[in-house]
Length: 508
Image (tube, rainbow, N blue to C red):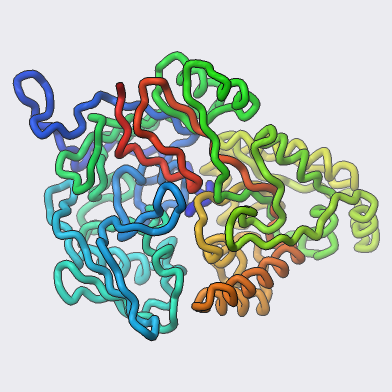
């Protein structure tokens, strides 16, 4: 969110009408080929995308839309999140692990009617790598990408990369673009993918997608998808209950138990692969002192924080990766101890601290959690100034290092690389807090290329302990995915990675 919620919201997207494939209707107004003839689907999401370039954005709101517009080489299976074919039908790895060969579909077209082939794949990953875009760090071991023929792509690696499938398919941040797309389109506001829906229009109040009749997959079943931006959970739920929208993931957590008991809408929850955390700025005194960060970690009541966030639907965790994962590491050194926390501050000569804590009401649980954090830290003499920003401002301040502390979440991670690497290596793309430890770097770099799964887990376990001990991130909890939809919605599948895919959705 993988995208973190991490991820953006400022530019009011200009109206755009791009590559919208109009259905070819017969005399009765039904699409001749039957595609996308099932009505107009309306989804309420909590925030507005910052932009629509899949290689530039880090906003979860953007990826909620882009999931339905673009494709990747492989895609996580909805059930177990293992990788299955998408634009690539099969793949193989050389004996030395240094060459990966992908065989591509030959029946795929982009929304503008151009044919998809291997040159588009090479262009996509060369753009990410050469232009040093958001996911370039994932491809540090890629020495070359070539297209031996129109349906074959080869990745040449400098070192074995056991999680390459995760790198090329875990989320739409590595979506395949047509060759030359960045020159032909303003990708911030325009789109040309191979997914089930085309971008029809985008305004400050919503985004509309239209069914792509020539989609290579089985769907779509509905004629259009309209995304409405509703930040207030109660308002989004009311819209769902009254039939103004068909689906939302913005449901007040305190209402979930009641809604699951039968209320005219379907509400489901599943454990997520997400984590929520707090981070302090290592460059801002007194948070540059290890004792102060440890005092904060000791003072927090994580159970109360999890309850405030999700009313019993979150699990406390001090190491990010959920406990039902093979990669989970049972390490929890911080049990709430206000006296020990106060003693650490006293020993460090720190008192009368005011800490600005950035949150955003576009993700309301950050505001609710911040109130618990403020109460907890007040007990050790740290006054918390809760700074509620628009998410666009939040991200700008994070990027500029203009913060004492912030609270947010990372969504959709599958491999431990996604949980730890770019957030905690010294020059990491997402290491905004400024943590730098050469031993952690070495552990994370070694784990990224270790082919033995057990040895790889051991390396990540050791790295996680160093990260937790230094409080690079102060991990808080793993939430559940909570989503709701109307009784007339069929074919929707809730996912642990929060990928919002309306390809198979129909309206009865």
